[in-house]
Image (cartoon, rainbow, N blue to C red):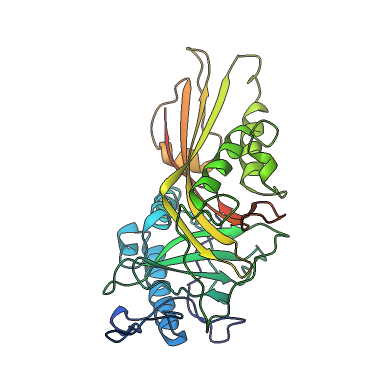
Length: 337
């Protein structure tokens, strides 16, 4: 879920469905007059276009220079954390193939009606040039005078349909992390998904509340574990492989869907450990792990940390539907031995 360099986030002139993704100059945002209740979308198409272009330019310059500090004016949160690691790996390998491609065209915008801050907007991009599925991107404005920044992204799971949202002229309400109108609060839904990612669908007690599609993060993590167990001599040597994924409670963003449910985005911190007998050597298995380890000597232990951005659809309480993963980004951001 992390291929090729970003081809801009340059704004597309023809957008399908809603508006253009983010807000423009913060000081031009529509504000209620004194004594007047404000209701409706807080961003205009023109403002979205300005922000989209600004983020695009910043990311493109950082990618070209392979300098993560150049991202800071327009990228923050888990998006910055992951992008910083990807650029470091690209610089180490002299190859940017593992830097996520985020398409430059958007096919749908989800505009907030949030009166206060922070404010989060979402965009569904077009497919990539090599026909990978679209990305869902979240942008956030921390305060009235600050710029919108890219906060997170995921690659949508093939075959999964997105929920419907209110028209951009109406806007969509933000949903609190502890909202109790849903089948599970956004915070709880992410924690439950982390448990399934860790234990697998057959062992996690939360799996019954989820509709897990082929190709989601659960499948990706299971494939990682299977790859290690297929390494020659793994089982014979008594090597152990363990994994643990945990949701960040304070890194949750959610927006109301048209049916009363919610689109939820958040972050899972993952850690895998491969431990062999004392005199053995555990090599890095992926090119990213090799780059993250650098010149460190091999030992009998290899720890890998992941910063995984995920998106879920959580139905309204009482709905017959189950929680459904919509997309994810599975990226190793640190390794040690």
